[in-house]
Image (cartoon, rainbow, N blue to C red; front, side, top):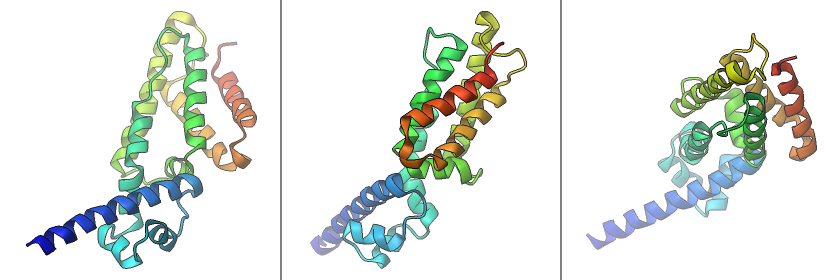
Length: 186
């Protein structure tokens, strides 16, 4: 009985090491990380990795689900105009994503059937609706801007983030400015 318990403890420890190694590897290198590299970084064999996570998708879900949940909980800052709130939200989101290549990969090319991704995209549209609602009072967004337009602009920025070398903050800020000019009232 104690041998079974020890194996379970070892299995739990292996799983935790795999998740830690996968999270770090995915954040640094994106979704293209080789599973063998993750297993090696965790100090386990490839068979052990696949015993815990039968597919890459299972591992990604387990390792990145918390990061997607954090993005899905981000909010438009209180008290700011619609356009200023979007600037702060877009800038903060892009800064978070610049440190997490896998999230960029997931948001740009992820499967729409993934529950966390769906929740995140629905939340981005909700942020857009908050901005549109604020703009009815402060008139800082163009009259024809919709919540979906705002979500699509952020998704476009996320796609651009894949292309920005070394996540250059000045270039990211410039891209945020360009996107917001398209949404701003004239």
